[in-house]
Image (cartoon, rainbow, N blue to C red; front, top):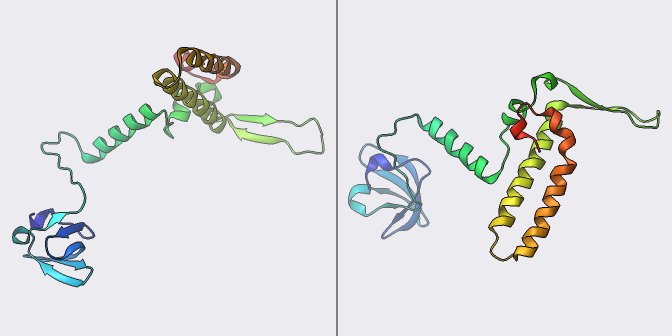
Length: 176
């Protein structure tokens, strides 16, 4: 292992001393805290190796932050998770900044106001979770075809119950 590959706080394994944590890095060696104390180690000749898997990306054509953002976005999409910026993006412009106001029948009770962006986010989360559930049902190897059909009917009826909220969506293809 090269000295330049070490980072402070990195977990490492030494063939003689066992597991340790890098505490300091000098010009020619690293100080590693092992169970039996802190020891100077020359990484190149001592057989020191990382304790955890390492990744290296050579020739990266975009900034690392962009790569991470794209990776996390793709993962969130695949898992059906809602991104914070998506709640306003898909809301029809005429509803942005609006409020949902609930007036109870009993005048002694307080009126409840909720920002439409927050409410819309909740509706979108329900839609996305239903889509993930639908995918999991269809991909299941343990459910019978009859079970899949039955569960699919519940999802279809849930979508139908949520069509009232279609008026909030900017794009028709995003609706229920």
